[in-house]
Image 1 (cartoon, each protein chain N blue to C red):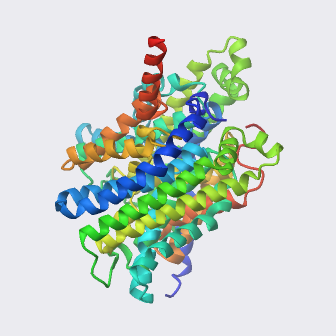
Image 2 (cartoon, each protein chain N blue to C red):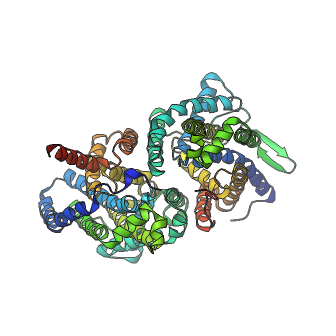
Image 3 (cartoon, one colour):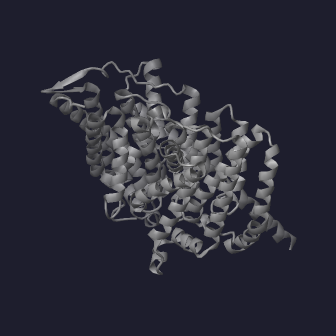
Length: 292
Length: 325
C-alpha cells in the first residue's frame, strides 16, 4: 500500500479536526449527564440517531434546512426527553448508578428497535444542498459541511459553557453536582436540575446527530459507536470539563482520520474504540478526577 | 456504591444451603435422566433445549460477574465470538479433536479477559460496563474489516458438525460443568470475598482482600465459560461470522435473562432463561419487536423487581408465611 499524497493527508487531518468539533458536542451531552447526575446514559447514541431522523424528515417533508433547523431539533428532543427523566430516572434516585444505567440500556434497545421497525435498516443521509460542496482553504480541501458543523458545534459547546458558568440555573447545576444533599438543603430543586440536565444532554446528542447525519450517514444501529466514541472523549477530556471535552473531541477526530488514512476507512471507528480502551488502561488517577 | 436493593437481602447463607443439597443429589440425577431421555426428543425440542442450555451457561457466567461481583458486563458477545472463532481455528488449522477444541476455545476467551483486565478494571463499576461494551464493538468491527479471519463473510468449519443429539448432550455437559463451577464459586470463601468487593471495595481492601485479584478470577472464570458456550454455538452453526457471533444480541439476551430471573440469586439464570427463550419463541418472527419488548421488560423489572422473578416469588412466599404466623 502506498501512502496517499500530502494534500490528501492534510485534507483528511483538517476534516478530522473539524469533525472533532461535532464529536465534542455529542460527548458534552454525555459528560454533563455523568457529571451532574452520575448517569451513564447508554441511550445517548440512540438519542443522537433520533435527532438525525427528525432532521431528515423535517428536511424531506417540510423543507427545513438541517443547520437552520438544528435548534428546533434540539428543542424538540429536549422537550420529549423531559418526561422520560421523570418516568425512568427519577424513581431510581438513591438506588446507585447501576439501576439507572441499565434502565437507559433497556431504553436504548427499545429506541433502536422502534426506529428499525418504523424506518427499516436503510442507510440514510440528510441531504443538504451544501453537504457535498467542497471548500478550499489554501492547499487543503475539506467538505463545506465539516466547517459549518465545526463552527455550529463549537458555538453550542460555548453556549452550554455559558449556561453552566454564568446563569443562576448553572449555579444550581454546579451545586447539585458538587453535593446534591447540601444543594437540596439550600433550596435547590435537585430533581428539577437533573431533569433539565438530562434534557440538555439529550439535546446535545440530537443536535450532534443532525451534524453527523448531514456529514455522514446513519442507520438505527449507528448509535452504539457514537456512544462509545463519546465515552472515549469524556475519559480523555475529564468529566465535567467542558474545555477538556472540546480538546479531546478534536483530538479524537484527528486521530480517527489518521487511522482511516493509514488503515482504510473501515477502521475509523475501530481506532476510536481502541483509543478508548487504551485511555482506560493508561490514564492514571481515574476519570472522575477530584470528586467521586 | 451499590444500591441497597441489590444487597443480598434474601439471606444467601440459607439459600446456599438449600441449593447445595439440591445440587448435590437432584441436579446430576436429572441431567443423566435428561441425557438418556433426550434421545427420543424431536429436532425442535433438541433445538430449543440446546439454546436453553447455552443461554443458561452464559447467564450463569454473567451472573457470577454482575450478580455476585457487581461487574455488569456489556461484553458477553466478545467472549462468545472469540470462543466460536477459536474453535473454528483450532479445528481447521490445528486439527484439534472436538472435545479438546471446546475447552481450548474457552481458554482463548479467558486469555482475552486477562489481556483486557488492566483496561476494564482500572476504574470501578460503570467503567467496566462501558469498557466491555467498547471491547465487544471493537472486536466486531475488527472482524468485519480484517480479512485474515474471513472478514464480514466469516469462516466455515472444515469438519461436519455433530448431530443435534450430540450437540445437545455436549451442551448438557457444559451446563453441568458450569453449574458445578458456580456451586463451588458461590458456596466457597471466594464468593464471600467477591461479594465483599462488590458491596464496598475500599472496605474490603482495608481488611486485606485483594480486590483486583478477586475480580480478575471471576472475570476469567466467567469468560472461560462464555468462550466454551460460544465455541459450542460456533460448532452448531458451522459458520462463524462477525455479525452473528459478535452480535449485541448475545449481550442483550444474557443480561436480560439474569436481570429478569434475578441477579445474584442461584436460580435466577435458569428461571430467566426459560422466560426469555419462551418469549423469543413466541416472537420468533418479529426480532425487532422481540428486542424492544425485552427492553421494556428490563426497565419494568429493574424498577419494580430488582431481584427479578426469583426474588419476587421468594418475597411473596416469605410474606405469605409471615401472614400465616
